[in-house]
Length: 79
Image 1 (cartoon, rainbow, N blue to C red):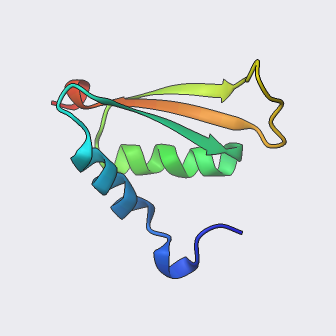
Image 2: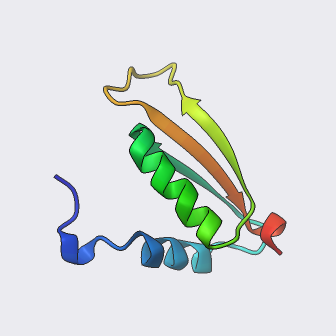
């Protein structure tokens, strides 16, 4: 499941979201499973942006079927 391959372009999606973000804004990114988190981290490194890897995310509201990993990227830190 997910997006059809022709629409799957993480770099363009990130660039679009980053461009909409306010100068003092931050992105809170959640990825499912370690493989996705590793790809996200490589994307952030490739773009040369400072980020904070939050590691495994736990929820007090819902038990996830798949592990979730988080990142915070701040435009203020990137400036």
